[in-house]
Length: 164
Image (tube, rainbow, N blue to C red; front, side, top):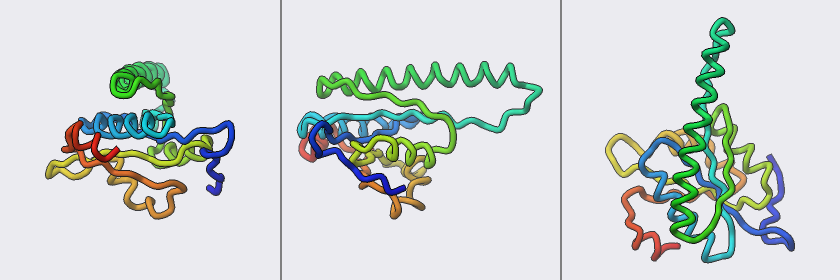
């Protein structure tokens, strides 16, 4: 992946990519990204990834129903996150739903949007670990085409305001 970033060229604007998943700390990433976007006049792209299990052909009808339900859940999650971003910074983020391997999908979204300048993730502060996306990302972050910002999950709004 060698797509040149163009976010600061004429006709473009910088955007950050935020993953909206089932974790409770996604809100911290959305808050940080929204504050960052409003401060620099940029945008936010929110990504929800649906991990599709291998589906047996004899259960194709059930698989289709499960996929449709997963898309409905993804839309609902992005509605909540978009509402939060709008409430924080009066912005309307772009919304993307993808199916498949999370790292592959994140990299593909970055590759296809030359204005994305950073990936914003939030880390779970609890003893169970930082969260599934951060855990998956650690092994490949050194080869990411953009910076990765990890927001501690226990930062307050005021703490994030001071940083963004």
